[in-house]
Length: 174
Image 1 (spheres, helix red, strand yellow):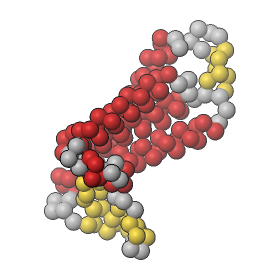
Image 2 (cartoon, rainbow, N blue to C red):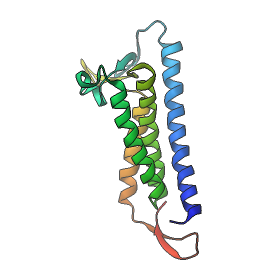
Image 3 (tube, one colour):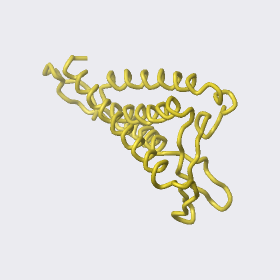
Image 4 (cartoon, helix red, strand yellow):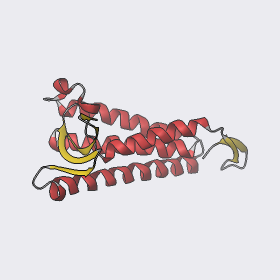
């Protein structure tokens, strides 16, 4: 990959990552410091509440018992995954894939920062049907889900020919 292309991909992935971290940080700060003072459940719709929770496990609280006393172990594992996603984002020729991977990495980074700072991830979005509640989640999780959907849908489109930085035709999709 040409050096200017690597710089562009890094900037694109880094921008998506930074935007995801910022959205996650701001929403968690607002929930903890303003909206949920005092902590309570706020009904928004017949299927959606805002409720404050702290997840010490992995997704949906899985493996909570394993990581309860070792939040930095889980944070370390997640940072290795984020580093791998960033390298993948920098190497892919598809712009949509670069953005998707940046979003996924940014969401994961937002949750890692929570684990490092407070030993658990702040969750506040509670969707439910009747008495069945989906595990509460946050904007980092939303951004990760958006990134995954974009990654999958982007892979369904065929690559389109473009002109590379050196002027030779190449097969790249945006």
